[in-house]
Length: 78
Image (cartoon, rainbow, N blue to C red; front, side, top):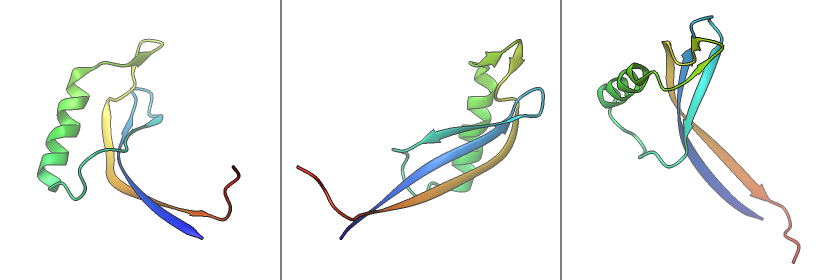
């Protein structure tokens, strides 16, 4: 059995209506300093790139996290 692990950086923010939205970055550098991540999220939020029905999708910061996913290949067909 082959096992692979993938790490994704996720920013979770709430929109202007309070609904949560997640921005996932699968190729982010691992173990970035917290201060750099806080600055990056703040800068991203200030861009105001996304809106739905007039509400900003990324309005309020909620969390920053690394998510690790492990995949165990049982069999592969050729």
